[in-house]
Image (cartoon, rainbow, N blue to C red):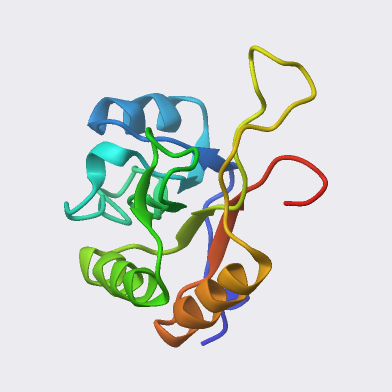
Length: 152
């Protein structure tokens, strides 16, 4: 069966949310949103990723659980810090086992609130991002990225 053959309820899709608890799903549902891509929270590290479909009227949740971030970079709220290819591969498999439907990477730092037009340190190199995409694909997962600035 092809995915476009699956009957989908009509409504809105939100491609970037951060779900902290079950109350958020009620708010999402009340807004007429039928599918969300949950971009994760650091507090989810090592926990089971939220269910894809919590009930008949609940939105479809495609969750990363938590993000992969470069050790020492921007990610304190969203990511598990990794440095080596081995750590990256291990974390992707951990996410897959926890139920992640997508892998999120912190491809850059954040827009600085103190210095406008400045991106804070953080993010993976192009080679590291290509490795992450390859490892995610091997685990049958796609990748979404937090990216600010021209380079990212």
